Length: 189
Image (cartoon, rainbow, N blue to C red; front, side):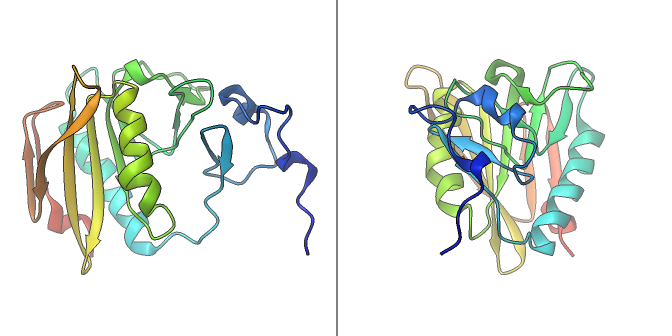
């Protein structure tokens, strides 16, 4: 049995808090905090996932109007016990070089690209948490035989839950959070 490194033990009986992530230099990249528990992305990233995220970043940056920024692999401090790290996010916050997280009110769109390791969190846990935090738009991208399929959700303000707004293959055209027109087939080899 392998002993866990000392830094993986929570600093208090209540577990981890959002601010603790900024003080864990030993933590692997892509460490998230979900309900006070550290979540490590330990599986190797698939090439499909990496290429899609890179190409989608470029496509959104080209279409984003002034005042919108695309950022990747940055956490969102949803509350004191949750700091998930989406693959991409669209924000209206100004660029700050030493930023380590965004507040939910600064985020307009969260995009998760589903991998086998993250499937449950992306489809259920994060879907609920992002909605409860008031983030207006959520895209969950699935791999359908090598082609991206985008499940789009919009926030229903009264219920603080997401309503499905469409499933997109080949082409994604949306009027929000700004006019988006994506050739999904061009995002993967």
